[in-house]
Image (cartoon, rainbow, N blue to C red; front, side, top):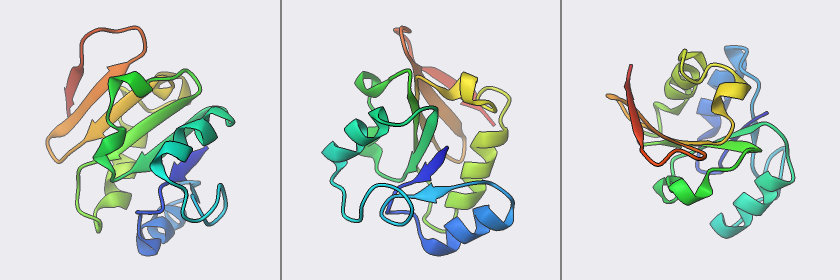
Length: 127
């Protein structure tokens, strides 16, 4: 399941849906509106195989790696979210749930940094 944070604009959500990418959004179809950051991680623990997309860089933390979810922090403009969500989901390094689970990823125009469970070194991948 792909979940967008509340900080993702509705037009970006709509664009992903038009492209055939299944997404849910916090406060719209899952969770509740106004969830605090500290409530999101316990909420993700209740789900399985979830990829959570946010523009909040506070989630890019190695300590948040967990087998049940993937966190993707998008360091891009609010009008570019859909394009970068699609890029992440299509990238050969993380194009399946199995490849994403347990990872915390920071996405930028240049590429992405990734922490994985049980790995002591951050990896960097170019687009």
